[in-house]
Length: 194
Length: 189
Figure 1 (tube, chains in turn green, brown):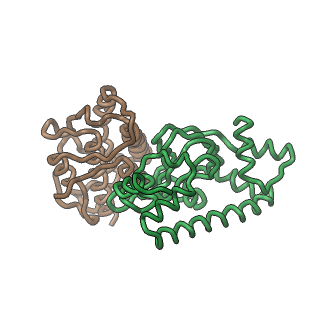
Figure 2 (cartoon, rainbow over the protein chains, first blue to last red):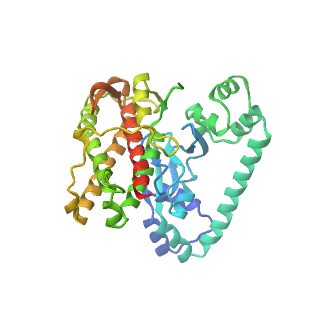
Figure 3 (tube, helix red, strand yellow):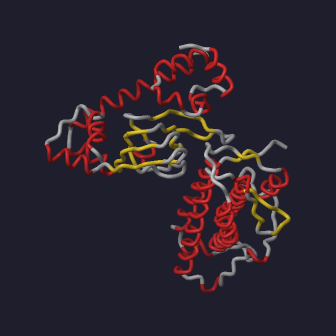
């Protein structure tokens, strides 16, 4: 892992201060994984082996509905965490797929090493507290948006807050995430400003 | 009849499910794996061996198809099965945990295991072979995601009466496996 990547990674854990020795050890726990566009990073039915930190690219996490259609639950992108977290923690087969929508470079840590972070540095509990709180608020926010906003409002709200790199992925993934048909998304994109 | 839209992700999910199930079967007692419920039935190991034989016929066909298939620079897309292939696939697919119609196994697919000498070693070999062959199938499904699958057809294991595009072939194989997973549930009771 190069210096720039490690700096990005450390910035993801602002609550944790390391001694030089601890920092070297922390760094040694992560490995760089690269994926081509449309690679399946995690397959439904397999156990998620890693917690990821995204250096480059965009990934979608989705589940297949009864008809076999992809239902997008979320995205990850540069600077964000990624992975099928429930499968990773529970060590059970994942219900979801994680797919690289753009060529991706990610840092990965195994389950044992992830758990060791908390055991060896109590400061990771502080990070965890903040991290899971943010995740929960994000999910609650999204639930409210999905249940209360019109398609046009969902489109506008999302486009206002989403990073630019997410705006260039195939439309059908964005449409699914916003719970609308690709045709609706396309119509909104052509006639709605945000 | 509604059209059959095939996606590789759906196939991968189902294949993973089957592989996980066979891993669980591997943990069962030898007696459970080798006792058929009645004299005419196969035992579990024979069913697995039958699946090995079936995929063994497709393996070289798939390898050859890939050698001729151009790559595609686009997102993997769903594939609409053709009518006759859809009917052939539907014949295999179990419905609500039941095998819709029984069929006689052709000689070339018969698992020729000697039940008297089915040692643990031989059973392990059958399972290992299953995992190796079906890892090949997984690889094939993954590889097909960025290939122009409309370019090459392969002949089915029963001959030119059926030919398959790759997604149809994978669907047929998966439904065939799912059918035999139902059979295994019946054998185990």
